[in-house]
Image (cartoon, rainbow, N blue to C red; front, side, top):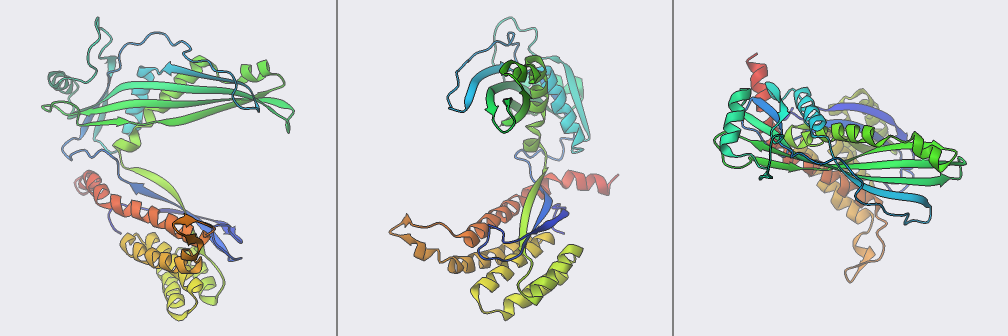
Length: 374
């Protein structure tokens, strides 16, 4: 196994005549979970982390923007902006970091650092303040919540198929987090990310649908808690779920290889796909075998070899879909190139894994060291 790309595999039912590929070829899908590196890399010496609330005191939330419906099928539409609850977000951030089991210890500072401010000041923590806080909390570095904003869109539509009104609320959260290390000026890293959370309710009337929808106070609390989990994928290595496809029929070799896939006997499946690639002459058959070989080697964490095979599949798919003939003078005439498009998509997935592998191994070294020295 290369590094820490541990794969969890789940087989799903076959997709017949899948739209991703031309022709009535049996294609099966396979769901995998694999690890990707965080954007921020912490030195191995930083084992104890303090989570602090450095968000300024904010006034009570009030509606900032109110817009009428803009689309014909919408009866009402309202956009609001809120300040998130920093205490709730900070607690959720600390819990999510602790659940990651990446640091030896995660400590939360109960008090808001700027609660006693009389006059506005720059939000970034100073070198002296970082040193004092780290010493008080007995930690190696600080992760500070600097801001959290919430943007909501409330809509009410009439759902004819139900004969009822459908009320929805989309909340997009914008947390800002900074990482501070003692004896260093400024922040080591800044994470400004965004994600969305959604609620829905139905009712016989507009008022009834709105009444059943989540209330403002509860929405702010749940959205603030959700916001605390958003930066974690930038701070810790994380799992990503991906969907993979492979050709499952058409020839004896391909059908027999599918049996091995279902048993997760990858070396046997790869042997049959290699035989298929070497013995077939038609570009489409060779493309399918090369594509499957990329899949088979990825399942064995041989990402470099998987990329070699997907690049070969890409060359063959270019020929199979006659991509060059479908472009004239640089203008796209017809982009109905399902084989080529899917191969390019898969190449991007594999390239993402390859690009992050070295960084992931470095980030996971602390876990390996702890396992070797319990």
